[in-house]
Length: 143
Image (cartoon, rainbow, N blue to C red; front, side):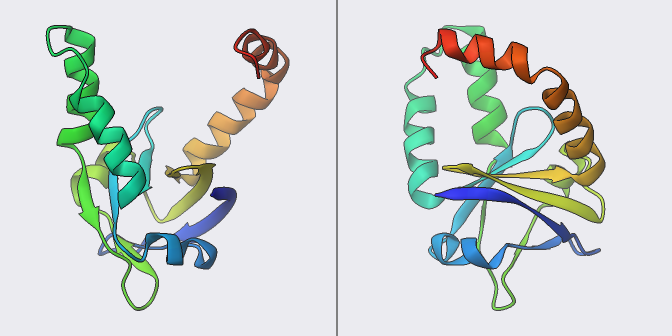
């Protein structure tokens, strides 16, 4: 289970240190892809397989299903953790998420999200302001 929020620097070659507590879970390989809200999603191979299977079974006759599958699947890239605990993020994904040097790695149970630090701060500040409204909507979903 991935939880917590960590700040790490992205180097000029696109290498990002994975928080030490997550390295074992990612040691068998991982998949990084375009996420929502202009971040990247990083999955273990097992979690990626579950998601990819669901995406592959979406009705391809529906435009939104095709678009979402393209967003997630076409942008995906296998990554591995090197001996220093880093992964290399492809340039097209760094560009998509506007990642600069300061990067936030956020654990969200079955995935990690990779955010530009400024974008993360803006997003969390807005979410915190709307937390009561969000909580009310989540209660309608049984949370």
